[in-house]
Amino acid sequence: MSDAEDRPLTIADVAVAPDEALLECRNVTLAVPGRRLCKGLSFAVRCGECWVLVGPNGAGKSTLLAALAGLREPAVGAVLLGGRPIRSWGARERARKIGLLPQDSFDAFPDTALEIVLSGRHPHTPRWCRESAQDVALAQAALAAVGMTHAAARNVQTLSGGERRRVALALLLAQDPDLMLLDEPTNHLDVAHEVRALDLLGERVRDARHAVVMALHDLALATRHATHAVLFGVDQVVAGPASELLTAPLLSALFGQPLVAIAHPRGTVFVPN
Image (cartoon, rainbow, N blue to C red; front, side):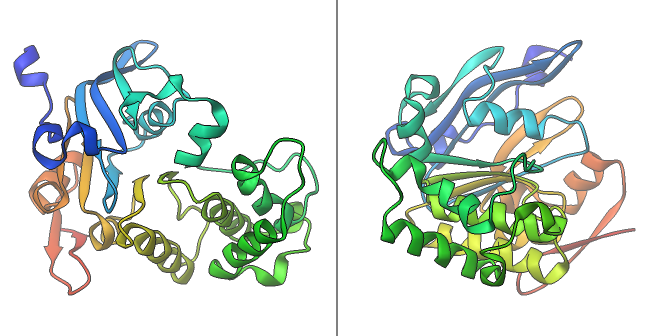
């Protein structure tokens, strides 16, 4: 495939001006040993937008999230946070702007759920100071938002996978960054908590002060919330408006599985044909 054919669609010049963007992915190429995941990927994220990363297992969604969080250097191109290279930000100031929820959490110590969520307030707490009463109140409110108030004093190592996932989401809510990056936020959750978790993120986006970028396998939930999408294909990664990319023909080709679109008031549902 030629470079022209390999170049993905971009929306950086159409959807948002660079000086308005929270985060820019500018001409980024990502690679792992023996394999290129994407080439020349460009898009910009601004407040009030919800981006979903969609594609088969191993396509590169988690790698892109790591690059957007400043944890991985692109092979080519740059990631800009607030118009500056993301790695030029200090750790604390970056954590006030951007937060990451990884696919899974590892609990090395027997902290309580409240202590875990309070750690999300550390970027906002002066050095060598304990959390304030307001920090504690914000952490408790975050636990309440995910339905985990009852577990505030519980050792997180005793919680189920779904309960621990909700605590991790509460940590991100307490951190309250401008941009939330989430890798499969519905991992381990039952259907009711899946819907509630994404509704919480949707509320953050609709307040026009926050933005979300998340990798998501549930296409019904993706169409319910997404304003924009990045499709990770075998030969090409494409970014653009969700209404143009989350369609049965494109998703069928992406996953190698024929899908049928069923219209629903809360978003299109895709079912295997």
